[in-house]
Length: 464
Image (tube, rainbow, N blue to C red; front, side, top):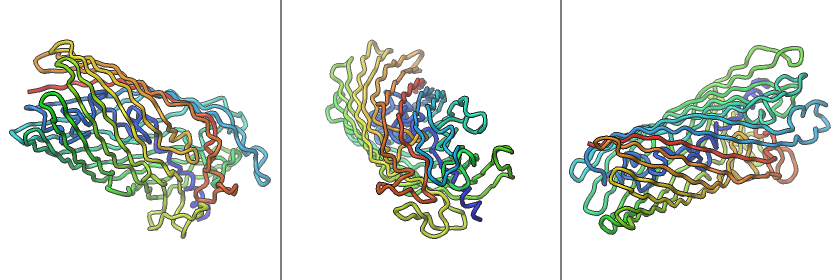
């Protein structure tokens, strides 16, 4: 049982590309960039089913919408391994200093439709509000310890996938200049993660193994929103609220597998498999914005959101036979059910965005924008598997009527994260200098972080 409990400590879930696509990098690990510059709380196209269900009341007739994002992400983490402790093996920190790099390309879809009948409008869609893919590149490593080729970041993450598929449906009612709406959602959540861990739970290259986590679950959620045409055909105000997936804590179920390396360097044995529960709380989101038609051919937009990532205090793993997932302040477990606890203590984030559209003709719209967003992760708990930070963005694109009310839009958004140097990580050491206790201990997150994300968004919309 001791081997099994310590082995499960290896299931340190990075939550896949926390910066993977984000709002093309929204804070935390959100991927709410479908629609690009035209997917906002102010949009009346079918993306409003997700961003602001009240806005679909301003649509006309039938709208069919298909969207695809292609994201390119580059990131690096430079880490200096801490000195080995007096009880550590001489080679315990081999392969834990240096720079890890990644360059990943991945894609994500969205589709939605709306129908306006008198004062009522109906909408439905499929979205991926959180998600991403991560694969860190291999390095030369140390020939004596083959696992070191997976990079200095391997104790946090080697590769991972995070996918939240959300199906939403709802309606809006428009009465004069005001439209209010609501949607209900079904959300399927899937997380897989591979990383390094030792049976003791502490960083030790000489006893390194590989852990895999695979969990999934289904939850519900809802959203409400409103849009007001304050000045006819000139000024619009929009606001919405998106509830947490699961309306609180999520509990995903699945398996953990621990695999050893080859003899004689490592102690080879049969893989260990255990059924586990994974606990986390995702954020709710408040959005608001204003849209102004300065002239018939020129429009300005200002909008933002407040995302309550402070709900993400930890990600906890326990056996399916246990009902507890609590730890003491030093990281030790309360009771015997907790097998791994990942401290997050993330912060609420906000974003602000300015956008504009120039209508060159009835068939051609050129649009662009710029924004700023704060990061969710404090220095104390940031790590390369979930690296985050303040970022600035810029986008440019166009929308074209290519046939009879068949519109094609394409845009590019560049997100540049501010370089970050962390020296006060508390993943391995408490503020008082004592080591973090099991089952909460992780490799420290100190080091230099760099990151940028580029997103190509292409969508097609048909109006009837």
